[in-house]
Length: 584
Image (cartoon, rainbow, N blue to C red):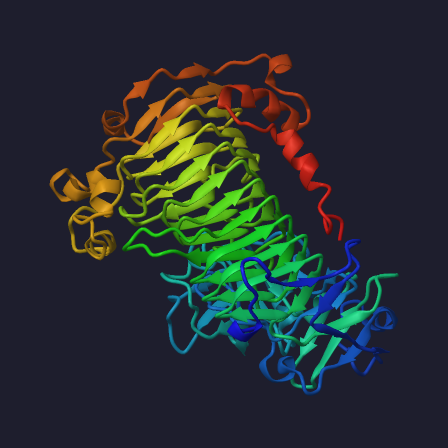
């Protein structure tokens, strides 16, 4: 859709589906499948006994037949997937080992950029099982525990019983031991919902789900694209099953998406670029291989807000294929807003923020950052100038791993000198750390409740660079900090170069309560000099009867009286449960 399709403010173009949620726009086609023969699957685990359970899909003419699976990862830019298979509304996945989680039974040498390739070895039993695989992929945390990547095998060194790969996109040296799994393995094809792609023969072998519905191949890159348009409303529709981002909005304004489902995507869910007054309201965005919602807009040098917002929506099951740095919502620019949403079930961060004067208020963020290490439910970093952002009245709970070891997971992660944030009236429950201040300055942390945290409510450390010609200084000099509106809006930035920019100065911790946990933790004794404590309450011991109701939302609602939220979290989740496509 372009400018020619636009409406007006008083009479927008409205594209509406049935109010009962039965209208669906799908980018997939139903495909027929035939049972495989023993000749098709001689390497299937279990042998001929398992063959009757497996179906064969003909993929001739598809991208997957030429490209194979899609490489994924933190440093891999994925425009679209080459293959997405569904049975009904269930995403099918490449057959893998182990079936869940990761193994560490692997050894590797070389660097991520090594040539001609990196080699890994596995226990002899596994090598023998996989040595005849023609289209095997390895995936995992090769160089660090916050950088996931998948890559195809390109060869086998039989003399060393090693598998070889092309260079990775991840930065740094590959570790000798790391968390990994293999996928697209015929020898592991056994569970319902799994498949193996054989691009050489242009087929996929599938173990179908009993009574799971029709098999579908996704063939559309995008369901709807809006470029240079204005005053358009999309409502009461399901946009689903795309190889790339499902809805794209670029250089547009006054666009509303409401009461919609967006998802089952091989890319992202909704991408808003360089736009103004885009509103996503009362939607369900679920099951995206990459970032669920990306929103950018506004003018940083002029500090002009975009007016873009996502409201009263459910964003879940994101980053299902690219496991790190693919959040539920990513904000970039000026004056974007996330309000009243549930953001949950992602392996890495729930929200990533960049820019100025963005607001994250009244949301529930849960069950994120459970896989990656050194991450936060809300994450930002490496820029002194990205200021004025507000995180207020949110409920963070069940973030990261619940048992040791300490993976350095936090509710709000002000990484690498992130500065000028207001973090106020939030509740943090069952999070390793509530707020991490990693060298930043001018942050205000006030009137929050930190409850039952294994480490502490707040963590502070002097970390980062000063005036070294590095990334932070370059980003500082790129902004007109001596001119209005910057000089008026962020006066402390004008003199940052004269006031020890490498130190975490002028942070404020006031009016907070810590229950069943320490209020603050410093990495070194010297860090204590940088954070004065003002009017905080710390109750480290609690009787079990005082700790909480069994339901986290009930406990949070009781604590919100201290945190000052206008709407109890329990009521917020109840309201979201009535969304049109909530159960789809």
